[in-house]
Image (cartoon, rainbow, N blue to C red; front, top):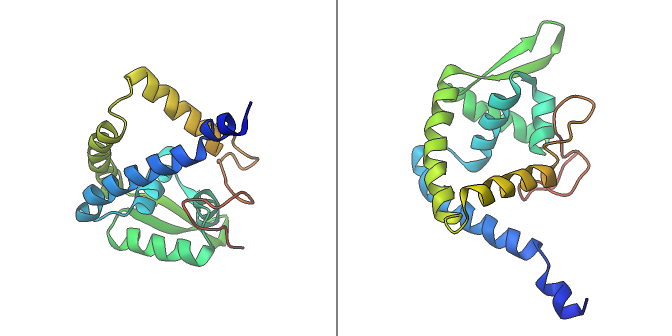
Length: 165
């Protein structure tokens, strides 16, 4: 393969371009609704995995513990999440999605469906399903580590932020 062919086959510039277009479209819709993309991801993870420790959630989100606290404070203030002490270890907090958080996530997904239609409108339903599956594999969502939750700990930056330890 020539160097020109190798450059043409690079996926990262295309992924970055698509991510930027999706991020712009999402911010136009989500910010007026009151949620930032990281908050949506947090609610989605809690919906999918159920109650998790605050530390595990931080690892899933690739965030420093102090940033997790700020994020959860915002979500808790809006009644979207609930934090409680772990009865088995009073030093740990368990975080879960509230009923209000579940409703907000449902409403947000309706908005995100419109964004996906806009950004991925040239793909068929089958191609979108394939893309979704490939993206899940690429981020490791199909390879749970020992704790049973996918993690980005020790990997490259997630969501545009370095993993801080």
